[in-house]
Structures are given as structure tokens and as C-alpha cells.
Image 1: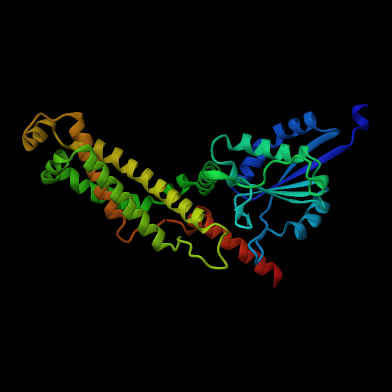
Image 2 (image 1 turned 180 degrees about the vertical axis):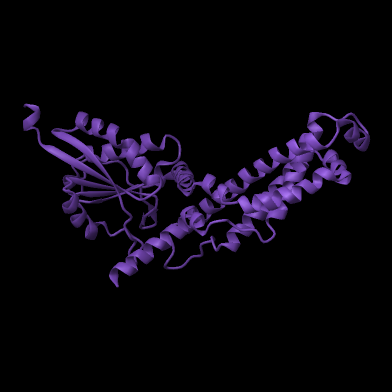
Length: 339
């Protein structure tokens, strides 16, 4: 058959803004090659950005929205990439099919954070390689498993949720908190009593102080911004994973802030405190380790001080960097659409 006589099919990759849109753009070319290798005819990929709402049942109404989207874009197949999650009968889903168009929702957090694009591309290609319209009626048709299974699957999904939350972006939104921490941590650099306390502490004790300070600031930020999700009929499908991803995301952002403080305060101590004077205060020869311990303890002091009334610099970052906020925003989209 000549190239001109081949049936041309177009896969529409519709993606949420942010990480899903980035994934869609990166996998498009290789996905087209995979489909052309595995399926008959000629396949092309078109990428578009749009967020679909969540209905009162907590589901993405793909059946209601797919026909209009397919007709508008003249697609053969719709694949919607979202950073939300979905459950059915208590089981979390990797993807969801609608055979009428056909259309597919792929829940990106389920592919994890390691080789995310490659895993998403393989999953989409495997689904499309099976005759979707026959797969529901014929159990012999081999489709990829649509459920998240086992501890590894759930941990992979948790890592994907944290990745979608972009903890680095949340860390950048802690500039005000970092400034408070720097000012407070610098106190430790200039006072000899703090030097002696830092010198007397073991690595285990310093680590414990660091964990406690990061936990305090993380807990404050979660409570202050209402990021903890309770169990109601208008909450995401997995409140346990949602809260776990929130804790991991906020803690990662605070840890990044702590590392910035540690680096800056250690450098400040090395510049300001003369080694001879530090030796006289500690009662032994000062070394690089002593400066590191001083910067470490001062950074923990600064992190604790940062918890006192501090907050993120941007409400937009909080909304985009926490799963529950995005989920509720999609619910409001559906309510607005209905009214």
C-alpha cells in the first residue's frame, strides 16, 4: 500500500496545565513513532492544553465531554493526561476508558517520578495498541492493568503526586520565610554560647534538632494554609495519599530552605569568625567541622524561627503545589459549568 493510501489517524493528547502538558509535549514524537510501528495506518499526535472538571461523584465526566472535544479538534482518539487521581470500588486507577469515541484518561501520578515520560508513553501506546472498542466486550483482549496494585504501586503513585506538586516551586515561595530564618540563624553565628552548644552536640543530636525544626515549620505551613484533607463526601478519592503527598511536598520544600540556610550560615561563620578566636572559645583547635556544625545548628535555629507566623509568598503556588487544592478547584469548575 502506498503512503498516500494509508488511513491517517490522529491522537489528541489533551493535558492539564503544568506537568501533564510538559509530559505530553515530550512524549508526542516518540509516541507517534511507537504507534506507527505497532499499528496499521499512519498515526500523528496533536497536543492541546485544557483542564476538565470533576463531577459531584468525584469523577472526570469524560463520556459527556469527549464527543465535543473529538469533533472540535477532528481527532480519532482522545487521550487526556491529568495530574489528578481516580478510584473505583476503592481501587485507584491508572487509566479510564470510554469506548464510545474512543477516549482515555491517563492518571499521571500512577506512573511515578522515575522515567516519567517513558512510563507514560509506554502506557498510552499499550492501551492504543489494543482494540479499545473490543476490549470492554471481549475479556481476551489484552489491555494493561488499570488498577494500582501493591505497596510498590502505591509508593510509585505517591512519588508521582509529589512530583506533580513541584516542591521546588513551593520552596521558591518561601523567600520571606528564608529571610526570617537567615536573620535568626545569624544570631547563632555571632554569639559564643551558641558556638559551644553546637560544638557539644553529636551528629545524632544535630540531626534530631534538624528533623524537629523541619517538622515544626512544615506542620505550621500545612495548618496555616488549610492543606490537611479531612474525610468528607467532597474530598479527593484517596485522602491518605493526598495528605501523605502534602506532607512530603511541604517537607521537601522546607528541607530545601534548610539546606540554603545551612550553606549560607556556614559560609557566614567562616567569613566572620576568626579561627583563632573560635579556638579560644571552644578550648580546642578549630576545624572545618566546627564551622559546619555551627552553620548546621544555626540553620536549625533559623528554621524554627521561620515557623513563627511565616507563610508562603504566593497563594497561587500553594494552590498549584497541593493536590487537594487542585481537586477542589476542578469541582468548582463543574459547578460553574452546570450553573
